[in-house]
Image 1 (cartoon, rainbow, N blue to C red):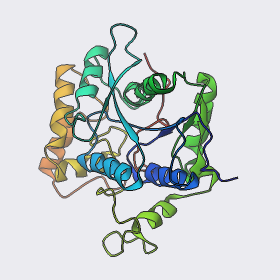
Image 2: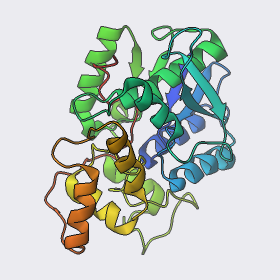
Image 3: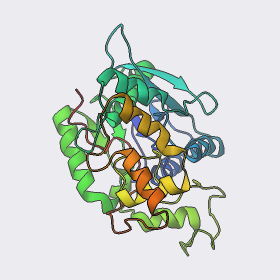
Length: 294
């Protein structure tokens, strides 16, 4: 059976990265170009996604003729802070971390490697709220389709364990189809896998290097990568530094953002290249930890 033939009701979680875009394309093709009404595609914007990501999500929807619901988390004083969202679009999407800042202000602290509740609230809860609004369904009553590849087996096992504990239903069609990282590059860039020397089979691409990821200075990225991002984009660390100052905390206990900025200032050409990189596009999504949602 075609792993991309998704039976509804289902939520396709589109992170805005190349891997989940590849998955979405295959699902659209499996359904003959049109998704069933009870198969919803959602992209959750935290306000800290790169502008390149926003353009890519918009272009995927436009070129492939698929409705992608752009959602942003909002606190809901009438019910609970977990359930509210606002549907936005390319032009109206937050671009200065507004949803993320609102959540941090409510929590009065920063998320970190061990308490990644930014993903839980800003991504997962926002999409849960969308499914309630569109189909009247709660998690566990629909399948959550997640873009993890075959070579991300450990994350898949962890995701399945969490889903079982939370009573959710999850599907990993890329893993079932045994797609690996090289397949994704081949799809976007051509068999040569040389970004600047090959054609793009789809005619467009996410204009980010694989190591950059979607969330501009996510603390899940290795130290060397974050320093490289700071060097290439000096404006990016400002927002993160302001949050650490406001709440007298840090996103990464090893280094505050201002320390990384200072390290780059002192040695602008030297980076911790041996820092472990993430083998996926740092595609913040349903595969991140959800243990601590308090």
